Length: 217
Image 1: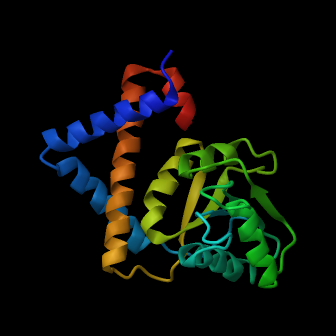
Image 2: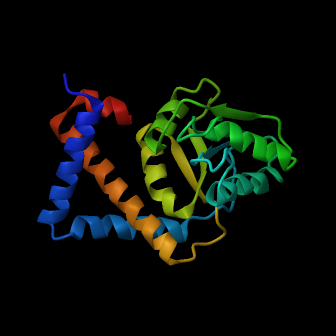
């Protein structure tokens, strides 16, 4: 029986092979998509009550700059949608003593958040796992969600959420996308991970590998 880790490495090899055989074109297409979503995503007309905030690795048990941007966006939304439910995703990662989601909840409470319905998910370790745990979260009653994360991360996160059946309203943590060297590196990394994910997804669909599909749906 193949392990999930083995499948992941196999799909990584296949992803790299596709990039090589296409002379980089498949990767460039994914890069263009990631950049397009980062630029175009809007947070206007938020009418979904379920607000999902993706966690991020903590620094000294505290949210870093990018994570704080995500949490601040949630604060802005609930300032006019006080009946919203907020779901913060992310378990214990790295050397942290608390989970990403618990740290996020503390940050919101320290900033006088105006809603009481804050739920945390403390089992997941990465973006795909975030979405899988969200799917089985008993508190989620609807499939429509507003997904908050940094703009460079929106494309991959939303595609993974859609894979688990969610109807996603993308909401960038930043007001707009400003290109910088650091953001460019993040975009390229996200494009690489998304290319890897899509390679595995379509391989599983084509080969009808139910075990692999179960991990992403």
